[in-house]
Length: 85
Image (cartoon, rainbow, N blue to C red):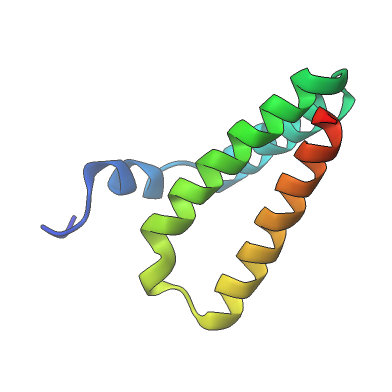
């Protein structure tokens, strides 16, 4: 691990990507099928985690990757707001 790298990012790099995908997929499905505000809050919590991860990895991402991630984050927040309202 580099001196400038945070311990959290080091731990995240060692996590199994398949497990992260399946857990995230399960969370999104639960949030989409949960009634009203509960689902919206879960989606907003997921969006908050993505914002934190996006902020940490922003300098090393290509502009195309940044754009796709911002679009997906915008879509997630829009769905969360629709669920809340």
